[in-house]
Length: 208
Figure 1 (cartoon, rainbow, N blue to C red):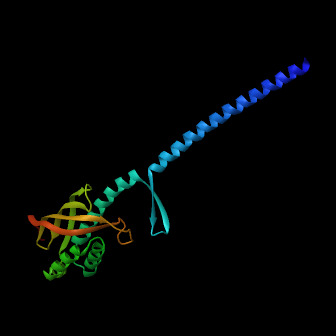
Figure 2: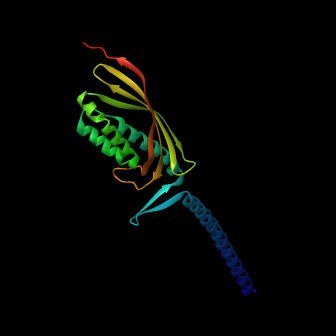
Figure 3: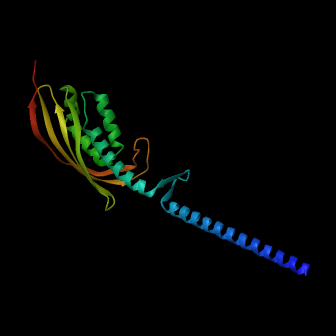
C-alpha cells in the first residue's frame, strides 16, 4: 500500500513538473515569437546600401524620403546662390563658379561661357558691382525621374549709382549620382536653363 502511495505521489510530481515546464516553454515561445515579429517589422523599415562594395550604410526609408526632398531643395538653392552671387573679385567669382559647376551638367557650363562672352565678369570687376541672390521658392516634382524643378528668386545688383532688383526664374531636372566632397547631396542638375531674368525696379543710391 505504501509503495502504491509513493508511486502516485511521484506520478503527480512528474505531472506537475511537466505541466510547469510546458507552461514556461509556452510563455518563452510566445515571448520569442513577439520579439521576432518586432525585429521583422523594424527590418522592413530599413534599407541596406553597398557603397562600391566597401561599406554598409543603413538608413530608415522614411527618413531617406524626407531628407531626399530637403537635400534636393538645398542642392538647387546652393547652385543658384553660387552661380549668381558675384563680387568684384576674380578669385572669388572663379571659386563660386567652380563649386557650382560640380553640381550641374554641361548646361551650366554653357551659360557660364555665354556670360563670359558677354563680358559679364569683367564688368563686375571693373565697375565694382556686387550681385546677390535671394531665393523665393523652389518647386520639385518627384512623381517622375529625373526629378523636375523650378527655381524662383530675386537678384540684387549693387552699382555705384543705383541698385537694381531683377527677377530670376530657372528650370531643369535632377538625377541621382554618387555623393562626393564636391557634391554632398548626390544630385546632378541637368538641362538647366534661365527662363526669365528681367529688371523689376531700379533704386538710385544717395551720394555724399
